[in-house]
Image (cartoon, rainbow, N blue to C red; front, side, top):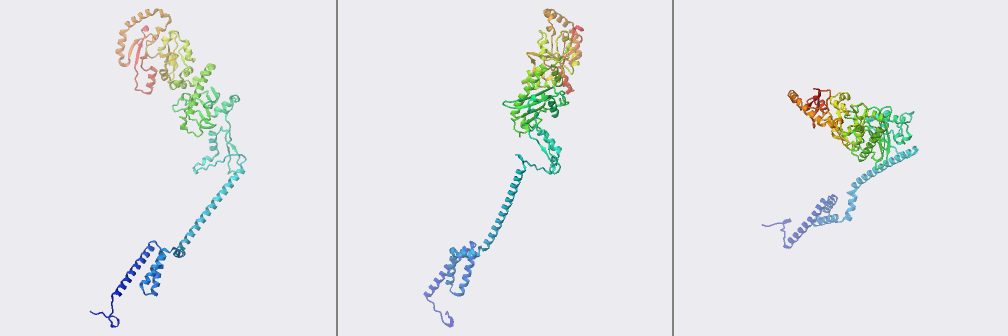
Length: 546
């Protein structure tokens, strides 16, 4: 097979020409690979401007040269220049590519600068306004002080009313040393009014205060009208410093025995009213005390809950209660009639302390007053001991709802015949404190309606006739043994036992509680609270009148 070339001529092939063509192709492939790598790297770096320049150079070179090797060499050279020649390419990129970005950045920076300038102008305006306002306030004030502005909610308009503001000021700040003045700025002809007294009576020496001023003050704080039974104005200094101005009203309040009633003593701190419900100031058995306590040893911002466990309040209470009881002791000795009036009003409440405050039981027992079966006049326990016969070893008492009911009791017949005084207990609290206290100056409290009491041992005239009385008692036991047995059969379980007694002189029988059982008055008190309660009583008969 023959190959013919152009013009019918046969081409001539040689080994050297074939080698030359092969070498040119290898070089062309190598240059193309390098150029392609440069293009890919520029593209991955998002340098599309350099890629565009490279394509444009290759396109223009193809017009001037038909040699592919030349074209590829120029393309590779340009790509390397664009890749590595930062000094040549950057000016082009900064001039073309970054021109738009620079413009956007400049616009953004301009906006930020304008905003910062605007904020600075606003802040400067505020500072100037604030400075001007402060300068105006300084020029308006004639004296040094602090201005406080309160902004109220829409639903709190009541606190803008004069009567409401006046009530709050007088309740909490009536006695501070600075005047609180009220003025309505929305009224042209509004006059300035002072809402508080700006003075505290208790801070003045007691010698400079008249009795009428005390009465007016106690009426102001709700302690009733008229002259108090007792007024105490003291200033105590020491570990805890405080001032007390308290009184005992002449008449007791109607709710004195209300279970929910607590102490109404007012607590002030540096003349500022804190609360009138501080139960820790005085115990409940002194709840009739009216007045206030002012101290500087408690933080002004203390909460009402913390006051109950505040150690300063506990120390004030201990000192104040001791002062009140000692002052009552002085009154009972110096003003007997006045103390009797006090006891009629508050005696039943004060006896609650015998049950609640065992620490002060001796002092409280000295303050207690009682009537006896011999007189309606009040006497103390010490006076009762002075009236006791030498043979009497115990303090006898009878508990009843009223004094008249007690004096009509058959239990008193034997004591009256032998001139033995018996205390009459008519308060419900007596049934609780008597078992707890037990005795007074080694003399035991004994109820004549409980247990077995032999009055023959108290009769001084019959001390030498004990043997005769013993024989007489045995004879009576034999005489009434059948009667007692018959009564036990008839009464059955209604009584616990039936026995003879020497306490009766006019009545045939009386009911008593057995030793260790609940007293009759206590059983009656329990029966009032529980209708199903049934006591256990003894049926006692005196043989002398049978």
